[in-house]
Length: 71
Image 1 (cartoon, rainbow, N blue to C red):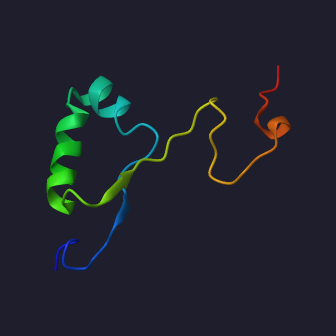
Image 2 (cartoon, helix red, strand yellow):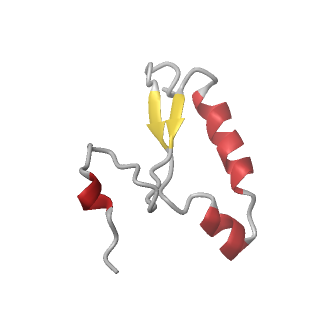
């Protein structure tokens, strides 16, 4: 049974280096992989990727002090 038959709507398909690592380290086009994932799960599924950065975007709500980097 595929994701469409199982009625799965949300997929997390990679970690923070999902695009960077294939491109820089093995010469792959990460967008080709994403196209294959999209084809497999269908156009209606929501795809997300976990990204960690200093942008202040976190999964749970954080106070600004928690996001401040030490000097």
